[in-house]
Structure formats: structure tokens, C-alpha cells
Length: 188
Image (cartoon, rainbow, N blue to C red):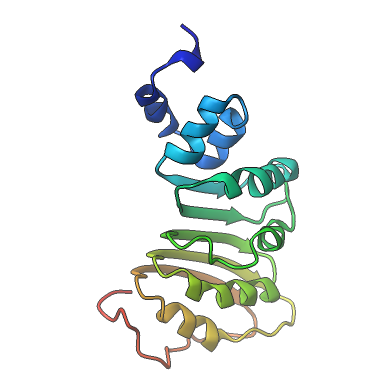
């Protein structure tokens, strides 16, 4: 018996052990049956973009993600040395979060600049189902970003109940309080 003749139920069980990133790189484009299972019937997609080569990142963003029919519920982008500029590149492929309407988990590690951070914050209101948000950002050079805008935007995400912000900056030493009333005041 070869791998491709395994029943769908067994393949789905095996697929459950992979992040979608690894699943698509390992099994995407092998044959029509596997593509159909991954693109149309695999229910949960969680992409973890850390320690990934640029050509693999490009392949997933340009070829695989547009073919998925089921929503992406988790996304982790880590700006690392292996693929510098990954976050900015991601937002050239996907200019807004509009197509990630079911996204529940978003983790952004090592956000490279205040400009990128501001761009991300402006896109967050599209994520109406976001429940978990983690942002890690170190901004040491003189740059300007609106911490109040960041706090207010995050505070107004309707379903958010877990938020972890790690924004290190020499410019700000105090936490800003939200100036708007949250629509989800029972949590956060």
C-alpha cells in the first residue's frame, strides 16, 4: 500500500499533525486527489511563517493560499533572518485582511518597523472574528507611531479576549488607556 492510496479519513488524521505551511510544502501539488483534500476539504488552516525560505514563502502566498476554500483561522508571521522583509512582503500579496474574515489567532513576531506596525494596526478592524492577538515589536530608532491609535484599535476588536503586546520603544514608557469604549467590555 502506498501513501496515496490511504483513505481520506487517515489522510485527514495525518494532516492534523501539520501546520498548513508544512502541509502545503510537503503534499501540495503532488496530485489532484491530495490537492482537493487540502484545498477544499481540510477544515482548519493554521499558517506559521517562521524559519521559512523566501521561495517557500512566495509559493505558499502566491499559489496555495488563493486556492484554499476553507478559511484560515490562525496566522503567525515571524520576521527572522532567513527571510527578511517577510511581513512587508506578506502585505504586498494580501493588501488587506479582508480575505481573512475567519481569522481567530494572529501572532506577529519581531515587527521590523513603526511603519509596518502602523500598517498592521490599520488593517486589524477587518478581523471581526479575531480572539487572540500577539504583537512583538522593538523600535529603538527615532520613529513615530501613534500608541493611542494602537490601543484604541485593538480595544475595539469585537471578539478579542486575549491580547499580548510587547512594544519596546525608547519613545514611550507609559501605557496609554483606551479612549473609546470597547464593544466587548466583558473581556480583555
